Length: 289
Image (tube, rainbow, N blue to C red; front, side):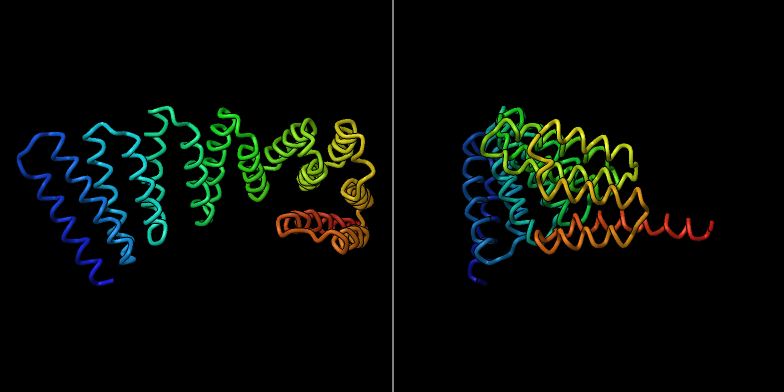
């Protein structure tokens, strides 16, 4: 590894010298680019990720001088993938540069892919607002390129995080839209009840009994088979428990569903919020009597 590090530094120095020397404009940058590329590979082999990242950025600058935007964008992506291991902020910055260049040259599917990667990095940092922003951008770009599966994956992430930060209406609209879209596709039809369940749980979090009842009626109109599912029964029974302000009934209904179809942590978190509101109401009633 020490050998690779030394070799990388030697190649990087050669590239720097090449840039500061006299020579034909194009060939100078071409030669330097070749040396930076080799140097970055050596740094990667030495697992010196910061050095590899910064060298790929130098490579990107050479490609920009040569007006090779596609190669420059790819070098920024390579830089980002090195920085991902050590410096998330730098990785995001490099991916943004890459996305701007891919947009400039009309490679929108590549831009979408790296918008999604930026979103994932923000997600890993627990920066939910920025993750939402970039998943939305990725979704729009995937949609424009008619890559609807990836667009829907990104939309679901937006809905998931929106609900987490209590933007329930936004989450509801996305889940309902995905459900409507899925009904028109035989391969996606099986997932409709799951999307409607997610939308329904977000409705429950809003705590408006009339809105929940209306939503359940709407979902039956949207998909006549929904009323025969356990997902529908769960939502209807919880709505009834809320109307009756019965915490025990709520707990039993959720437990029964969970014993057959284990609830993921997202659903559990939201249903706990509903339960806490219900408990608070029950206490309020007790205090009044």
